Image 1 (tube, rainbow, N blue to C red):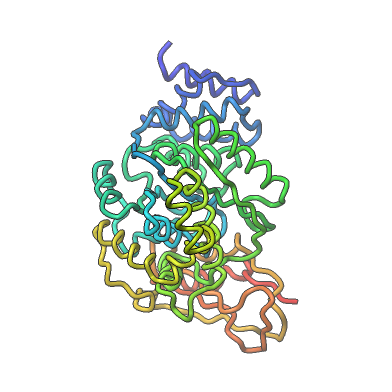
Image 2: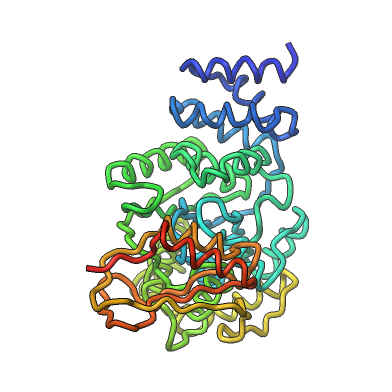
Amino acid sequence: MDEKQVALNAIRKKLVGKNLTYKDVYAIMDQIAQKKLGDILTTYFTASGYSKGFTSDELYYLTKAMVETGEKLEFDGIVADKHSIGGVPGTRTTPIVVSIVAAAGFKIPKSSSRAITTPDGTADDMEVLAKVEFKKEQIYKIVEKTNGCIVWGGSFNIAPADDIIIQVEKPLMFESFDKVLVSIMAKKIAFGSNHVVIDIPWGRNVKVHNFEDAKELANKFVTLANKFHIKLKPLIHLTEEPAGRGIGPVLEIREAVRVLQQKPNRPTDLEVRAINLAGNLLDLCLKDSPKKLQDEIRKNYGNSFGWATHILKSEMAFKKFREIIKAQDGNPDIDSEKLPLGKDTLDEKATKEGIIKSINSKNITVVAKILGAPKQKGSGIYLHKKIGDKVNKGDVIYTLFSENVYNLKEGKESLTNFPIIEFK
């Protein structure tokens, strides 16, 4: 029986609720990776995971097969990584975390995604400042020079089946928890990561809606990581609004750079979130580091969080970020306030007095995409007010940005059906 027939039989099995073997799963991943299955059959397989879910063994098989059907990177020693399950626009911590950890002396080759369930992915944002598409050999050179990189995982043949599955999911802006798990872990394994922190936000308007589901997903991450001998720490936190204020490629990378530059107008919520992620990741790495380094950090900074804070506050992290930009063929002479935003703008003003009760992340995503994100890098939304802020009539609550008057008009009209802010 040829590989395609094995794959077709396996999809039939999954659709009627039967469990798959590694041979079944490998055949499906191989056919998807070689683009021999087509969108319809790929969608059938992807949908089967939503309705039936996957067993623990199947999750292991899926992850292993995704990795084995593509290229892999290999690095010596501790290889750090951080990843968020996504779904929260306006929370671009990756450039900050990568810069802190790389400046601390650990390797952190970051494979990032483009937009799936938010208006922009980390790769879309980094592309504002530098190239993100590199071949395997080029990534090795970048990491050798700087300890880190922020590149698009789909730019070379790494877990190729995953990027094809992402494209069939994209129109619905939806991923199953199992798919999120496999997708993230396959990329981490393929990039040679062995010390990983996973950011798991939960809340009404993000991917995971309650704490119990977040806890279950966290446990699945740990179980799967153990099977691949990866040290992984999940961080669960309630998320009701973006950590930053900007949504869209330029707006989000601008906020990350503000934090790295330690500008007075930097978003402190984003800074706190990034230090928490970096501190936890450094802690994970330090446990497998020489005792001399552990003692030095304890003596000079108290703990990993104090170390991460020092690296950020001293602007060592910003210096490292500029090194990464240069290594990725970008211009390192950047300033957060000089990044070009969409020229067509509209201020949305409060029609009454009140307090911001909630911010709808799903609606933010819809509106930002209508405005042109992520293809139009300067398009998006800037939140002048956040939850708990008092608002007077006539105050600007958010600003819409676009690179096209038509998109701006459409974005404005979409607010009726997709309201961003609720007052009380």
